[in-house]
Amino acid sequence: MDAFNFHGDILSNIYHASSHASRFEPHVFSFLSFSSHIPVAPSLRQRKPTKMHLFRTSLRFLRSKSHNYNRPFSTLEAAGPINCLLKTRSVIRFKGPETIKFLQGLVSNDVQSLGNPLPAGENSVTPNMPVAVSPTVYAALLNPQGRFLYDLFLYRPTRSDEKVDQTGSGPGPDPGDFEIFADVDASVVDELLETLKKYRLRSKVDIENVAGEFSCWQRFSGKASKKSSDPEESESSAVGWGGTVDRSGVSASQGNDLGWHWNKDPRLSCLGCRGIFPSMATPPLVEADEETSEENFLIWRLEKGVAEGSIEIPKGVAIPLEYNLAGLNAISFNKGCYIGQELTARTYHRGVIRKRLIPLRFLNDSGVEVQQKVAPGSEVIDASSQKKAGTVTTALGSRGLGLLHLEYAFKGTGNLTIKDQEDINIETIRPEWWPAEWFLSHKEQSAAA
Image 1 (spheres, rainbow, N blue to C red):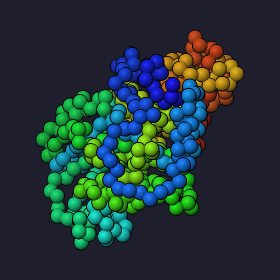
Image 2 (cartoon, rainbow, N blue to C red):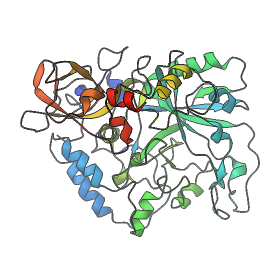
Image 3 (cartoon, one colour):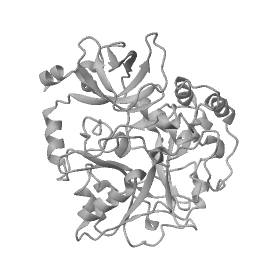
Image 4 (cartoon, rainbow, N blue to C red):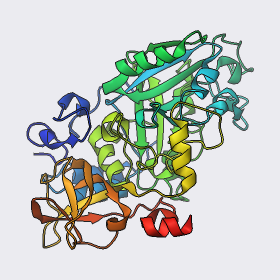
């Protein structure tokens, strides 16, 4: 069985804890096996040969007949840029002259930048490439009590009057209506639309589900944040990671009258880049042997300590700062009012966060990773005091995420176990992107504050 062919009993062990979901719902993670390619349109351009044999060597490791999840992660970290279609995400569109005003008063981040694109640098001859761009904005929609409901990646597509036209002679005409696209959790898209329309009132903005027309993609690699002098490797990492504009995918964008391009993932550089693209077109730089299934990106996120969507971040329960959304650039503390701001701002300015979402590794007494032994919702206890240290929120194979009290989280391997499964030890992973003050215990935070 392929290491990433998660059909059958392996798929049934991918769970997510949630206040409103007491059982696993398979449709949330309807992943493709790694050995089968995502059905997409033929490549829009021919690329010059690259050192793809290096990637195919990594690919063979990923296809090896092994149930050890540690090898796939180390292989992903060594591989060149790879791409996946995010089937667990959907796309909605905001359209109208009051779109920015509507979103600004609703979500946790400052979206004003979406209405004020920045110069994209020199671009005087390339058709469909933008002369002005707006970085992607990651934001959350909270309830009035400041609890998490939904996350959104907000994109402002380049307008025709902001990009060189098909003849290369200059920007095209003003397209009229202002548009923002949002990459959202597909499992809650209908209720999200209902919520947005409830808050719309008389705002001049239309909101619609355009999942049939557009798809969400992720491009990631262990080399994403590393500089390289190799020209072919630089080409592979130039889209999104090196800047917002797809400069090496120029010929691909010429065949797309929308001029869509990759963007930096607004959360962390180690997550690579992200984008919304027309469903019937292949994104720039994507080739069949560079595509992987979405569970690989899930494993990548678990190792980095990044939750995503309304299942991994429990809807109506999660406190945004405990799930590290401030560190993931989802919250602005300088903007005006938005729904749920009061509790979020008060917690932030107090400077004391008792619990945080932390990446976990599950081990036996010999220090060997154990597979599929831990389910979300499992209680984590401190072995020495037998007190509750937290809860496992997400689990896949030997990796997971847990909401843990910082007082117990980083005492060392063997200190944490699963209640009623004392033969399983929990090792916490210190994310490289965390600021130093996040590692402080409650007492240390209080003293610092």
